[in-house]
Length: 177
Ligand SMILES: CC(C)(COP(=O)(O)OP(=O)(O)OC[C@H]1O[C@@H](n2cnc3c(N)ncnc32)[C@H](O)[C@@H]1OP(=O)(O)O)[C@@H](O)C(=O)NCCC(=O)NCCS
Image 1 (tube, rainbow, N blue to C red):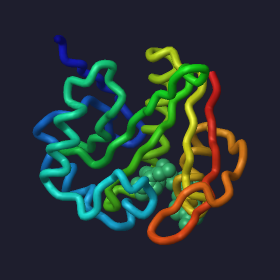
Image 2: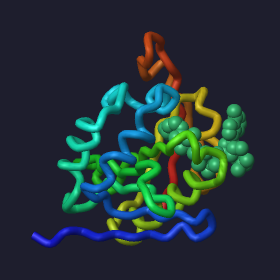
Image 3: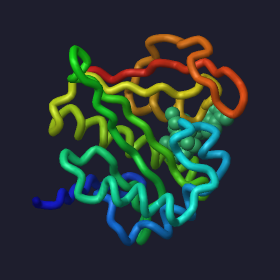
Image 4: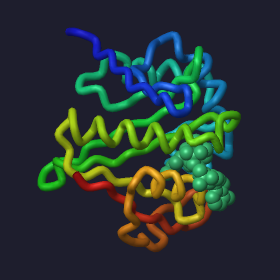
């Protein structure tokens, strides 16, 4: 089976969205091992995040077809991740987008650029019609990044998540073809 090799340049921030590689394990684990990141993601994202977690993740996504999980890469290492989770049945033209970035790289527009690029890829190449995100309502940087990328807030899902011992509201954001 041929291995997917995607590269979406993020020229405006000097980064790239690309296929994951097995060699990304060490930098992936180093950037992902952060409670501030875990607090804003689902519990399926491990914390602490160890090298074995990175290797297990990479074993599932390197060579994945169709390719739905991507590395956000800086000049010489993985600095974050972004992925699409397709739905099925009558929602089969929809996918959820999820993303995180190593804390050392926050505030430079990298997530916004990556969301824009993967959204375009999902609509133009994967044939999706709707891409949505479900950030916690308190996650101001993520809400802002989604809005800068052209996503529209459609509603508040009250107490829809249970994270770190408390119920949380989530916002539904979506980008439509
Ligand atoms: C959310 C996350 C991906 C954003 O990455 P990033 O590269 O720093 O995002 P960007 O720089 O593209 O945009 C962030 C925006 O939020 C703004 N922002 C940051 N902190 C903020 C705050 N407390 N209140 C309001 N806006 C804030 C930034 O100023 C920036 O907006 P601007 O360009 O208008 O100044 C990153 O913080 C992260 O990985 N967080 C942990 C995981 C996570 O939350 N993932 C998303 C799950 S839905």
